[in-house]
Amino acid sequence: MRFRQIFILFTFLALPIWLPAPDLPPGGDPFSMLESMRADIISKDKIQYKLKYNRFKNSLARVESMNNWKEFNRYGFIGKYQFGKSALEATGYGSITLLDFKVNPGIFPEAEQEKAMDILLKINETSLNEYFKRYVGYTVSDTIRITRAGILAAAHLAGPANVRQYLDSFGSKNLKDRMGTSISDYLYRFSR
Image (cartoon, rainbow, N blue to C red; front, side, top):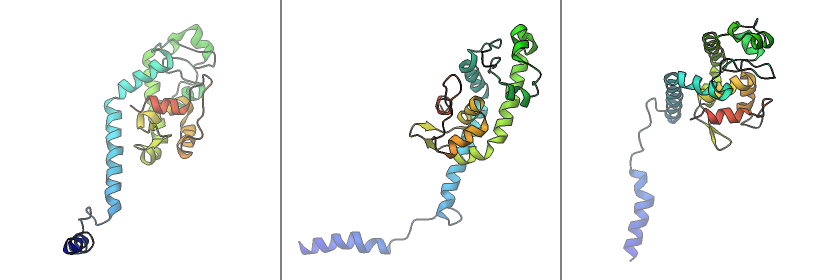
């Protein structure tokens, strides 16, 4: 019985000392493996976004206006994507007003709205590039997986600066629009 106890003790305590250490990832730095995994997650998310770009825009339009390019609301948001004044100005369509659009939606036809949305998404993508690198793949508030599409949808809702505040505060600064929709609502809805 004594021999068995010594053998077990030797096996668990002494033997591991003589075994070789596991190989480190290329470069010899254990953190390089984590960085590589992180870069892979971000890259795959970007590829998914690009592959599903039109589906993403269609889903955003459905949420914003039920895909009705003639839609407007009492707060001054117009079109298929419910563009506000600042979004219209940023995309080069700042001369279009709510009153003019109400009278004649043809001044901002669906094809022009699509162009404006493409421009706005590019602007927001450039503005939030560092935040994709920093937060894509992580989970906020235990349920919201952060994706490029979610960040861009939330930026359309509340603006890039408010999305940055939300992410930097780990979800505690969760702005809502006038309709009661929050940044976290869009991050969650478009995370899938």
